[in-house]
Image (tube, rainbow, N blue to C red; front, side, top):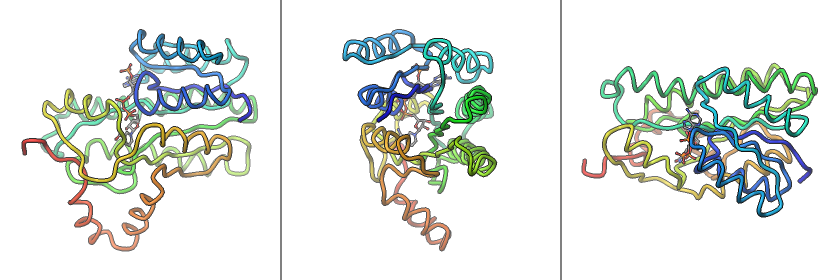
Length: 262
Ligand SMILES: NC(=O)c1ccc[n+]([C@@H]2O[C@H](COP(=O)([O-])OP(=O)(O)OC[C@H]3O[C@@H](n4cnc5c(N)ncnc54)[C@H](OP(=O)(O)O)[C@@H]3O)[C@@H](O)[C@H]2O)c1
C-alpha cells in the first residue's frame, strides 16, 4: 500500500481500531479520533512502537468544530488528508415505540450527523487536493432492516443516502466515496448497546471479526469501490430484498438481535 494519511472516527475500539492497526501496518499515517483519550493514546503508542505514524485526537463526532479541528490536525501534522473514514457509531435496540425520542436524537446525532460533520470537514480539503477518499461505515441494516433495530437502521440508511448522492456528484473525479456494510461484528458494539438500551441482546445471524472488516476497508482504499461487503454473501440479502421484500421480512425475522432473557 502506498503511504496515505487516514483519519478514522471511532478509532478507540472495534472496527475503527482494527482498521487503524491494519492501515498503519501497511504504511499509512493514522489520525485516530474518539472521546476516550487513554484508548487513543494506547493505540497511537502501539502504532508508534511498531515503527508507524499516528496522531491521537480526542474529538466528538457530534461537534462540527471538533470535526473541523480533526481534519485540520491531519493536514497540519502530515501535510494532506487522503482518507476520511466516518466510522463512529452505536446502536439502541427496540421497537420504534419503545425507543425514546432522546435516544433517537442521540442516534441521529452520532451516527448520521457525525458522518455529515466528518464528511463536511474533509470535502473542502479533498477538493483542494483534487483527490481523496470518503469511507462511510454503515451496516447491512443500512440496506435491509431487521426486527427491533429500526431506530439504528434509520441512521444507517441515512448515511447511505448521503454517500450515494455525493458519490454521484463526484463520479469521474479523483475523489472517491465508499460505503461499508458489515454484518454483526465482534466489537464493543453489543456492550455499548446494552448500556444504551438498558438490557442485553444477542445476535442470531452470521458474524465476522473486526479484522475482516478492516481487511475489506484496506482493499477498498487500494482500489476504490462504491460498496464494500466484508462478508461477501451479505450482498445476496440485498439482492433478495430487491426482488422479494415480503419474503425477506420472514427471512430476517430469524436473524438480527434478540433480548437475552426475552
Ligand atoms: N459491531 C457490529 O456488529 C457492527 C455491524 C455493522 C456496522 N457497525 C458499525 O461500525 C461502526 C463501528 O462500530 P463498532 O462495532 O466498532 O463499535 P465499538 O467497538 O463500540 O466502537 C465504536 C467507536 O465509536 C466511537 N464513538 C462513539 N461515539 C462517538 C462520538 N460521539 N464521537 C467520537 N467517537 C465516538 C467510540 O469511541 P469513544 O467511546 O472513545 O468515543 C468507539 O471508538 C459503527 O458505525 C457501527 O454502526 C457495527
